[in-house]
Each structure stands twice: as structure tokens, then as C-alpha cells.
Length: 423
View (cartoon, rainbow, N blue to C red):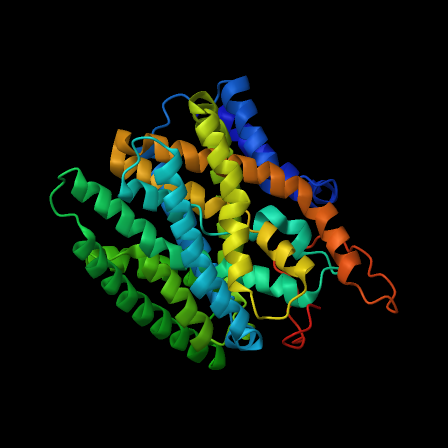
């Protein structure tokens, strides 16, 4: 990119920082804005699309995923998990595997020439949800706090849980192509090494940060960058040991958040802010580079898969997983619909395209089309559907809660509603 492209990208980020709350109230989420900006800079002005290859995008995608995995995992505390352990077990232990399986079966049935491993890649890459695409839901105080918390925790954990399946699928596809040194057994060994590396890095780093804060060794100015570096220690350390760095980053976040006492670890906010900036740049690159390719390769099968992925493939497993919870039907439907596909799916697609080259082209086109449709559908429907749902489950004797200005993605997490109370 030239200086003019860098200046325009930086201006777009600055402008979003100035008007993000107002744009959010107009149903324009960050992914919508930055995908559109990428299209303008790429297809319209031809400033950033030329010469960008998957190899050039991969470092940005990998770093973004590492920091997102760590930040999401470190923010999930035991109190939140205990408050609705049954719901999380159902959504992540039943709903997520069913979503992956349904997505893979649909790819095998609908898309010609898709083998088992590429179908599994599509199903796993499109299983994680992204709370950022439904920011109006997550920050709307009229939506029951319990439901916002459930959606947020599910989004924070399912990308880390789906990551091993994506890596196994890529390894299986490489092995099927006859690439030496790859295979399911090798991928499982990599995952085990990443798991161990993440536990050690996160637990030791979290304990060290606790001690440093208690004894006032750590400067407030540099504690945040130190935790940011810790994520890279976990990631790069796992790679150094021939393990999976993404699993290491996710597990390190869980261990760090628990050991460092998440409620006191303000340093995690620095990681979240950095991951947020990287996410904006990733969406912009997606709009500039991937969207034109996706639209060029789109056909009725790709579009049909995207529609079914966002509806049946997500909503049916969620409905099955929540049977017996006594949650009202509107709540089950609301949770099922707000499973937007976003950043993690984009990054998985970039990694697959770089690792598998041309073999992954059709799979990446399906993933890209589904994410593009989700950016529009979930971004534009978040506020009106959240308001309608809130009105449906509201207590008639309670005055309506105003829609407060958006101040951040993560909802306030005080209080623990009853197990069977959707509010």
C-alpha cells in the first residue's frame, strides 16, 4: 500500500472512533463500515487490492486471531460459567458440534467436488459466532442481561473450541493431497503441545502478574503491553515446540484470566483494544480483497449454502440443545438467530487459503459469502429484533429501559439472574 492508502485507512479508523456510537444507533456495525470502506479503497479507488496475496495477509490474520482468542478467553470468569453452566454446556457441548456436523454435511451434499476434509473445514470455520456483528444486542440494556451474557460467553468460547477442528481439517486435507508431515495424528499431537504450552504460559504469567501488582513492581503504563507480549509468548512458544499456537493462545487466556483474577486484570483491556484495531483492519482487507473474489465466484449453490448456514444450520442445533431448559420459544429463537459469523471465520479462511492453495478456493468462497451475508443480515437486524424481543419478554409492570449510548462491546456483567429466568 502507498502513503495515500495508509492515510485513508487511518482516517477511516479515526472516523469510526469519532462516530461509532452514532453509527451503531443507525444499525451500522464496525464490520459493515469497514467492509464497505475496503470495497471503496479496493474496487473503487484501486489503492490496496493490487499485490496482496494470502501470504501477505496471513500474519495480520494470525496475530488478530491470537489476540482475539486470548482476550475472549481471559474475560470469561468462573462466576459467569457457574451462573448458567447448564446452558453453556448445551450450547458449546451439544449445539456447537451439531452445527459443525450439519455444516459439513450440507457442504458435502450441496457443493460438488467437496471432499470430507474440505467439508469439515467449512462446517468448523463457520461454526463460531462473533458478538461484534450483533453489537446492538450486546449493548442494549432492554435485552435481558442473562441472554446478553449467554451470547457473549458463547461467542468468547466457541471460536477457541472450533479452532482444533479447523486445524485437523486442514491437516487432513494436506494429508489427502499427499503432503508429507501432515495428518490427523500429527495435528492431534500439535493440539496437545499447544494445550500444555498455553496452560504453562497463562498460569505462570497470571501468577507473576498477581505478584507484581501486589508488590507494586509493575508500572501501570507497561503492564498492558506485558500481557500483550504474553499472548505472543504462548503462541510463538507453542510453534517453537511444534505445537498449535492458536490453541495455546486460547488456553493461555483462560489460565491467565483465572490465575490473575480477571476482575482485577485491567491489563486485559489493552489486549482487547489492540485486538479491536487489528479486527477493523482485517475487516477492511476482507472488503478490499476477498469480497470481490467471493462475488465473482458466487453461484446459486454458494448463496443457498450461506442462507442455510445462517438459519437452519445454526438455529436447529441451538433449538435441539436448549430442549428441556424451559426457556421461552422467543428466547430460543433469538439465541438461535444471533449466531453471526464473523472475524474468526474470515481468519480461518485466510489460513486455509494460504495452507491449501487452490484446493481451498471453493471452500473459502463459501465461507466468504456466508460471512458477507451475515455482516449485512445480522448487522442490520440486530437493533430492531433486539427491541422486539425485549418487548416480548419484558415485565408488563416494569417501565421500559432506555437504549443507552453504546460504550463498548462487552456488556455489564453484574448480577446473576435465576436459572430459568430469561431476564
